[in-house]
Structures are given as structure tokens and as C-alpha cells.
Image: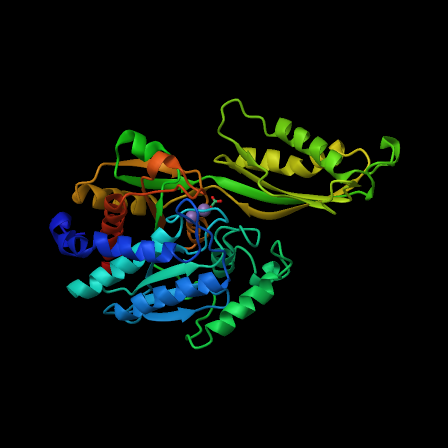
Length: 423
Ligand code: GLV
Ligand code: MN
Ligand code: MN
């Protein structure tokens, strides 16, 4: 870093175009638009492919080369001056929640593209290549768990482990992935995995919480991400006539699910309200008003910043479910386990320095939400940049971030990537 960092990064930061970035975000928001200004763009769908085509066109116009890997992670690359240098990465995801907003995920991809575009416009060519990656299935809304693309790339899981996962319509992940790869067969295929190992990774994202807005800050310098564990619980009973079957003869999956949920709520009780416990999906079969349910399935999303709490209470989930059942049987499967992540102190300090040099109000903060960055962090120095979102609302069509805040985050990202890519 030179003595006058602020002067060095000023031209690149000035070339970040707030209006262009906003227009691109709004163009993306049309793909899967739902009432209330929200977005429903599930991964590996025709809408996802349309969004990727739009992104590819913009990237190629900015001089980037495009490739795809076996997990359908999409890569945009701007060469540096040293072809043998390890790249600096940025990115996020383009899929949304089923009732999601216009910024969660897509902002980090469009911000990365904006940095490449600003570098091209100013002729800024650092030593290292800069790559923008759109990770596959971060949200986990269609296929559980989330972060499949970054887990498969980083080696946290094998791509084959996800093949049999099915969406709510019964489509297997392997088939949806094959369809996507066939549609993008014209793109060069790159190897799945961190080879070469990146020099660094920085992801920009909306905060998805209320702290920055409440404090009047422009930038969140993210210090780490709390850990999470996901489980899938399937309860097996027996269907029977609702009008004729006495209670003693019933093996009612819904009633035992309610007992299991009550016991899990007790297990996850936390007076400090740090622990996060969510049952966001419940499916019942045969799902008829006058039949006793023979099957109930539900998801568990459990998060905590402390690995010991995550281990102790997460390890108790299966036993608590089994002990709560009266007449049915259950299978409890853990579908993902992401340990708490601490970001690299040097990257955190660099983001802070970039935000200060650009004159933004900032604060250090942990992330309550999960991100692909937690699977990249074990492989290379990593960090994240947050921008405020209105009311802290996210995973909701009302999610909103102001164009000026989004541009501020991208300027900090540009300065951070330029410094990392110079090294
Ligand atoms: C990402 O959307 C998460 O679940 O935190
Ligand atoms: Mn996200
Ligand atoms: Mn999300």
C-alpha cells in the first residue's frame, strides 16, 4: 500500500457508476419479479439462466472472459499483468428466496461486475487477475442446503453429495444442474476447485439487519459469520380416516411433529436471544383435511456464533426429536454444518482503511446471515463489505437498499480489490 492510498484509489472509485449499477440491479429484478417489488428467482431455472445471460453480456462488454464449472458456478475474469499470478476473487449469488428481495446476493455479483467495468473504463490493470463468481444455489430455497456451489468448489462437500436432493416438485438437483450446464455448453468449462488457490476473496452484500441504518453508517466491515447447522426431519406414521379412527389407533405424524417442535423449542431456548432457531418448511402427506397424516417433514435452521453451543445443542437435536414421539418413527438428517467463521484480520483492516480513505462512516460487525464467503475463508484471506438496508428487512419482497449506499459499498470493494490485486 502506498502512502497516499486515498489518492491512488480515487480514479477507480470515481469510475464506479451509481446509476449504471442501479439500472443493472433493476434489470435483474425484472427476472422473477413478484408483487411488492420482490423477486422469486430460484437457482437452476429458466429465470436463473436469463439472469446469467444478462450478466454474461455485460461482462463481455467490459472485456471479461466467462467460464462455468461443473457446479454451474459462473466466473467472469479480467486478466492482470502477470498471467501466472493467483487471482483475487469477489462475488455472491444470483438466486433468491421464494419470496425474496431485489438485492440479497445479486448486489455482490453486480458490484463485482461494476468493479471490472470501472477497471476497464480507467485502464486499471493490476498484477493479479480479478474474478467475479456467481455461486450456485446459495439460498437453499429450492434445493437444501444452501451454498452448494461454494461448498463444492471449496471441498467443504462433494458435488455428488447433493445429486439426489429434490426440490418441492420432485426434481433432482443432478437433473437441474445437468439442464443448466447443457444450456451453457457454449461457455468454456473450467475445473471445479480452488486451483490455483485465490490470493483473496471479498464479498459485498446488503446487511440484512438493522444496525447500519440505525447508526447512520454507510459501510459494515464484517469480522465474521456465525455458524449454522441445518437438519431435515421426516416423521413416519400411518394414514387413516379422520372421522372413524379413535385416538388410540392413530399413528398421526402431525401430532408427533407438534410434540417434536415443542421439545425442540425448549432445547433451543435462549434468554439472551443470540441463538437462532427456525422451522421454515413443513410438508405433510397426504395433506388432506379428512385423513390422518402418515408423513410430516420439517426443516431446522439453527445458528449461533459460538462453536461449543452449536455443537452441544445441534448434537442434541436427533435425541430430542426421537424422545418426543409417541406413535411414529422419525429420521433426522443433518444437511449442512458451517462452523463460525472469523475473517482475515488483514483483509478486515484493509476494508476499513478503504472505507476511511473514501470518507465513509463505518463500523465493524459480525454477520448473522450465512454467505458463500464462509466456505471460501478457510482457503484464502477473506472478508465482506455490508451496506445498509431499510429497516433491516431481508428475505422479504420489501427489502430495499439505497442506490448511494450500494455505490458506496462498490467503491469500497473496488479499492479493496485493487489493493489486493496489486500485491
Ligand atoms: C442466507 O440467505 C442465509 O440463510 O443466511
Ligand atoms: Mn445472500
Ligand atoms: Mn439470502
